[in-house]
Image 1: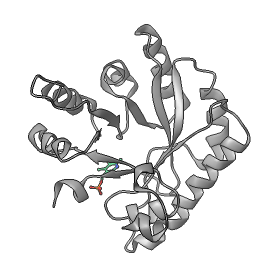
Image 2: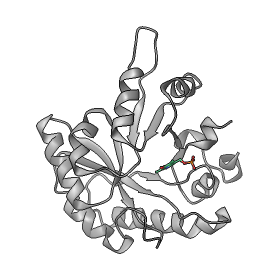
Image 3: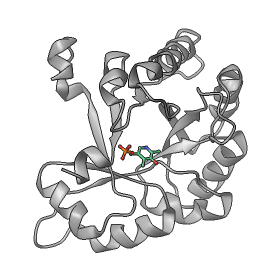
Image 4: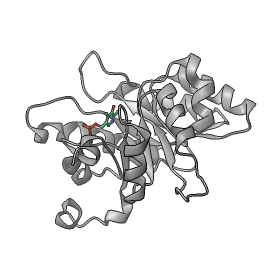
Length: 217
Ligand SMILES: *Cc1c(COP(=O)(O)O)cnc(C)c1O
């Protein structure tokens, strides 16, 4: 609906169903209903579901697994074995560790850089004013590929108030591409959750991360 209102093609928007706290059966149902991408917050919980939902003779489609929660460096080795996209790369140090571990298994790990667009002290992420410098450092790492940016908007009483944070992320991605820091260009803007995904899409999101909107219907 949002897409037709603002003339965007729904095919351009990837829905990541965030399955934290939900069992494999619920995730299986979502996949059978057409979901292709699953997001998880914790590595251990994701590994369990990953093995429970591996493609089987019964024909479960290939799932793209996304890590959307904070990643500790001591879990990187496990994370890179299962995740197709690590969305929550929130420091150069973490990017370096991912690069190092990915090199060992001959993988180029797709990542997003998590940007702390909101001033809340509790959130993880690289500050917007440090983002360009961070991309300049991370682009040197051969075993990661920076696919785009991710942000979590602050909790607000009215979703309209999230708009400036989404605008900021979009502008940052455009700026990084304009400067041609990576020779491939950043493509993904992962922003918007159950309470604010419509506004995020209006502001240019092409990936939304939905938990309650998918699993509590
Ligand atoms: C839980 C979570 C979501 C989904 O939240 P909902 O509000 O249930 O849609 C999205 N992104 C991240 C990083 C999360 O932790």
